[in-house]
Length: 186
Image 1 (tube, rainbow, N blue to C red):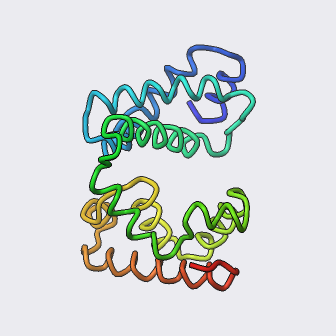
Image 2 (cartoon, rainbow, N blue to C red; image 1 turned 60 degrees about the vertical axis):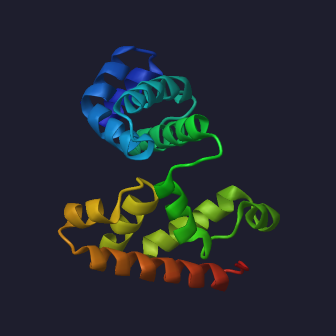
Image 3 (cartoon, rainbow, N blue to C red; image 1 turned 135 degrees about the horizontal axis):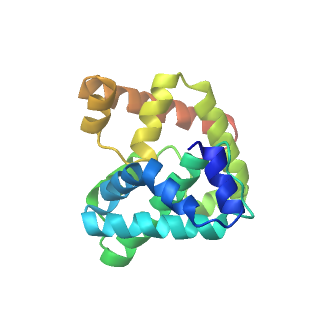
């Protein structure tokens, strides 16, 4: 069943929407969650919580054209919350590593809150991503949204790990320069 029809089922409050969602995207959502929490049973819980959150969010939201991305955002946020809850102050090393990689090219939350609202920053980031080639954009999103390892990205796109690392380094540099050009002090 296509995404538009599944979203229509949510809007009609038909519980089959969850069944169709799980059938179409369950494994992908669980794998995304597992990459963050590192535990299969917790990933399954996050997947199930995603369906509940989608049920509560549709309506008022109607993500017909971006349903999978909508679900990915939900499962990612739930998984990160679980990670924070489980480990309190001791966050997983790979999440901290990714934060450090982007730290030098994205303003801290305090700076961002002082200069612009979060929505304006997200719009600017989207404009930056649109300027990238499709390959660079995919690598960047797989690393910093889906939290894939460099090794996984290299395997997914049949690239060497050094090519992926180089691409990520260059895109982070481009992002930093773009943000500075747009008026951000880093």
